[in-house]
Image (tube, rainbow, N blue to C red):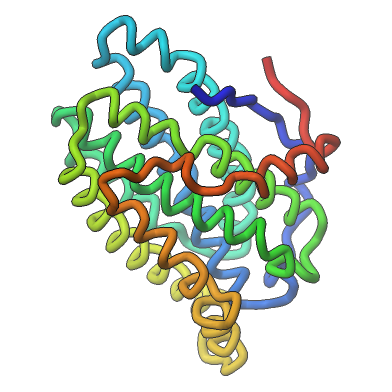
Length: 271
């Protein structure tokens, strides 16, 4: 069982954001904005899925996972609140969040089904966010030129994603979820996630006026496929999920623990 601390972030999210707040880079800004747009609806889906999954467990299993699940829900609820504030700034810039509507439509399709489906989808998504988080923490240059308050927000979120990367997986396993459906949900979630983040990123670029600039796509190529690019550095880690012996704890979470230890002044524990 993982002990999860809920932390209240101590940063200013009222001061308006620069249009290209991510170090002046239009692509990095649009991509990060797209991720943020998915979080309020996505985090609520994860909370509901894990909570419903735990309720379906026998009493002894519920008791074993209770503290970890409570911490998971608290962390995700805090992420939802912080990114709702961040997204309000994006809305004032004229960006339109289309991703959250797609998340809600897909959530409705799972209502009334075996809770293992929603928990399996959550576990798969948590793996994607954890490997993205660990990549971000291993490459601090990703935030070069970014305001300290915003770099802090993203690194705090990344560290907690790494910290609770096993929770949904453990609930899925406790529910008797099998390997075949775990892998199937990873394939489904990966296709939707990649398509959705690129659709929202492209729309953000169009609305910010940066879509037709050559430097935007040069940055995109370096970010995705460069020597330290996201796809190049995370593909094998993503593929690990398909092994029948896989568990998220097999992946290194030390970068997140180190960031939280070194930046304790950026947050205060809750409860």
